[in-house]
Image 1 (spheres, one colour):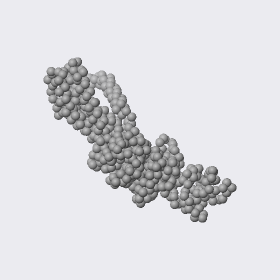
Image 2: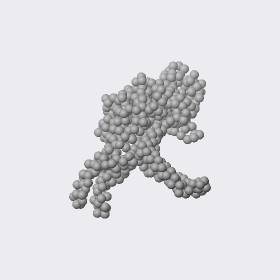
Image 3: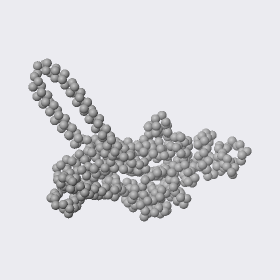
Image 4: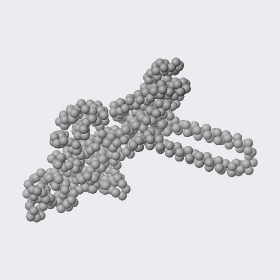
Length: 261
Length: 278
């Protein structure tokens, strides 16, 4: 069993924040600045409802910030020299993993939400100065935002795992792997569909010969397909919502544990 | 105590760097780990620190297995690598961040070392020169007061006065319960401070002795060309005559010439090794 001490986790978080605070803040302000610039330049061309929907802007910018920062996690693994200093620092592999997950996942989401919440008043002030459009406030606790954050956590867990594994350009490499996996899964799914439907007429023929009418067959098959679709959909949703991120966190832990320089 | 038992390791399949390597160090000593470039010194240090994992065998410090990299193990040593990266922060901030990981860290000792080595305290670490960064890391590593301090080529990049100060600091920092391991191929920089010599050649530990054992049994002297005494174990031609290692039969203690000893071991001089082992 690995040692786990919350004080050491906090020390590791403190280390990462103090070493990278300038880059993090500059990054946040760059993203917010880019959003404001985008609003000012393109305001006329964009549907007012779209650009004034702070929740959408928040979600889009959060996705960008969260994935970029997740890709920047385990910065100490980017070079041999930094890796040596990080891996010999007296904290267990699990403490190092947990500190990165807390800082990158929860730290990014919470801090970015606070920065965005404060900045959106700036957006409003700028918007009111230039345009006579009714602008609504941003609510971070809006239900859709909370549901969306769950998806962000999953995406981040994948990119954190990628950052713990790949030494160079982890965001790009993780993206390539994800794309490859998507192609693979999509191909497998297409093949299964093709395989199932290719064999369907034969099955129907067997069932039809057994005296079951086509109407009964259609209703029965439809019910089975609908029920199984619903069930598999629910299982998939539960899996994606509750298990996917922890699975990638566990993968991250093993990447850290097995890291050699 | 560092213990390596039956260590086998290879970077590539079918090309073992270490095969069944064994090593034990005793506390209270400064060991010089000597070897040519590519002999496996840094790899061996990384195995001890848990930065590389053995294919077979075990490395441990005070019975704590290196591979686990658990905090108790990591608190046992401080590793100063040859190449390192320092964050873009001040010394004060570095201490605030890193010192809490080492329970025996002493700020007064750190300040003394920094002062002795003349490390600029008002400059950010990333703005310092290589030598200044190295001196800073040495100061920090020694102030952590870990049981083991492992240094890989610590004198590389140090100017002449700093090398001398380094030797002074190292000799004053060693205590009965500490072990220092200094890996280098610049023997002259450390030959006056080490009291244990480990010579690594092509992944094999060819020699592991204390200086007093060497001085007891060997004499380092100049011999004449026509001197064919049986007592001569190894000799090298020089302008002053033949620099030789001879059997110390008359209890005349001389300061070991590390370079000569190293060359004799590397040349696989079995006569000398057999004599020392008997």
